[in-house]
Image: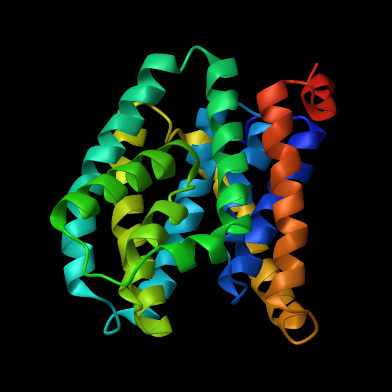
Length: 260
């Protein structure tokens, strides 16, 4: 039996999962990061993150199968230890502030706004970052930041990009390294999510109900890919993400009012 959710939850959840599917169909920019903030408008932040994790892992399996031989091993070795530490810190943050839903909403909202700011300044950041071979301390720092943001809101993409961009890796190696990194991080997150009691049977059943929508999103992504450029589609999604993030931070969302 599924948990009872208001209608607004199913609207947010369907939109979020379809956007993840579209992102996996080839649209760049990490638009799937909008999923957790959207869900957090209708349900607690922790439940929103928990609902998305199995769906992300399912997508990771497909991505790793495709890129299993195309990745930069050195970057993974430098990033993953810090990421593991970041996952632990994110879990501690969740555990400590779990009863303070307002603070968690603000945290996820700020991550959403920061993600949009990063995407807006990405070209400038890329130009500033001189080409170099990163050191272990850089991998530990950016890996930890990514692990923390990923645990809180599945929003760990920008720190990894900042670490990888100066290396000027070929596109397929860049994408493959990112795919394998987050496949490992998402598996690591299963442990703290389980310890915090987030992987409840009701959440998993809801995830199974939503899972077919990832296929709908993928098919829609394929359709949109032949008709729209990444740039215009991503601008639309970033506008949604910015509005969602600001609503979470300011606490004035109409969707939150509809919950009551």
